[in-house]
Length: 116
Image (cartoon, rainbow, N blue to C red):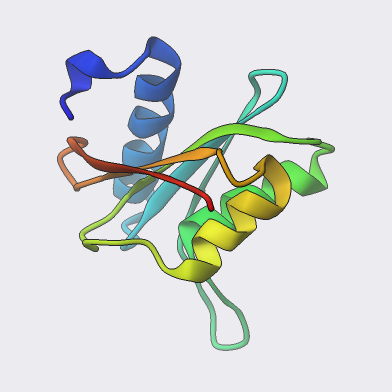
């Protein structure tokens, strides 16, 4: 999948996730879009007492801000696949069909997976 095949809204969350990763110098950046079009952006949380992936952090931010559903999610990472726990967090808020885009550090989307 190339950047040209993404909708402008999906390209935006990939760009936001990439920016979060670079700005915070963390292994992953993530962004989610809720049912109203609002976006929530996060990076990996790595504290001694708290470990959260960027995607689970972005979902938590959306929930804490009152989001009732998700339209899409994006993660920028060097990983080849997303952990089941990350997909479960998206599924819990957005449903099984919510698309999760996985992009490499350069922002190129490598896969789109439903949160099923």
